[in-house]
Length: 129
Image (cartoon, rainbow, N blue to C red; front, side, top):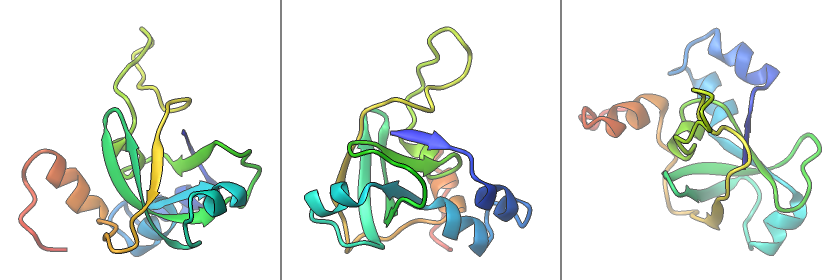
């Protein structure tokens, strides 16, 4: 897994991390089309991304940029942070790139909003979107 910045993310962030625009561009995982087929995932459906640190439901999309087989991209932010390992290799910065994940179909699962993910992570979520 690699987390990354994107122009679309920056534009959406100007509207706020709880905006529909931010949700649309950041709650996705970009994958190589061959991996999507191999994992029996329907394009533009929800998947569970799991790392040693946790899991998150996001929408699987065909990568709009080069993405070799075996690699996936989630834009940096709330959804990516659910699976980024806290290791820093003494840099003070979490390991945003180059960590293993599993990706599996989760078409019946719901992609949570940014506020729900953040508040849920610290036990403050009250159940409203």
